[in-house]
Image (cartoon, rainbow, N blue to C red):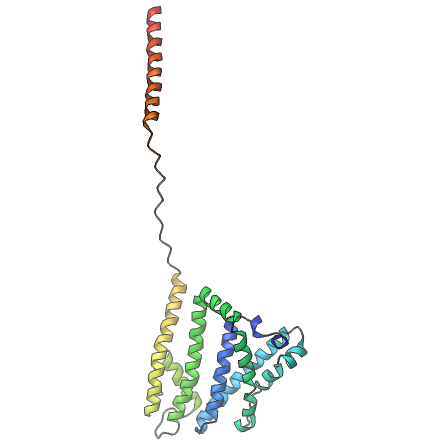
Length: 271
């Protein structure tokens, strides 16, 4: 189809999964920015939204460059929607740029369509074949998701509380990173019930993520265990001789012995 010119099918499955998950994250951020939240949380979400825009712009130019016909990708392939959905806010309020984010639904629908049917079978086969690489990729992707939403949640609960330690987006992101890595400096900590519940979620997620990364690192350093040596297969036993074969061998030996005796007797007579 013309709409699939330079489509993400030409990219690796990991790349398609990354863009698909990033699109879902961006839509969730868009919905969160419509909620009644404090200014600090809104500023943090705008930062994440602009960061996603930069990644989407890079994705747009990659697809545009790879397209055999640039005009088909831009018009029939709905590349213009990808471009509109990738424009950063540039300091404008969300009410002026939020409508542009709806264009990201086109990217989400296209990638979802390409990952169905035969594309889904290819992706499953690729994941099963390269389980180690996908485990690392999915673990890092989960860490990004946890950091993004946990930092926004903590800031949303803490920013308006009196005597709060986490009051800016930088504080919230730093706290989420320190907590998910199980370091826990203690310089920032939540004081509200909602912030503490979010902290518990980050802690449990961090234990799982760090555990998987440590397991992958140990497997990489130690290497795969050598396969156990199989015991040598014994050679098949020779079939037991039959009675006829044994009698024939005895006759042959007796004939040879008789010839030897006759030879010795002849030599004795000559002497």
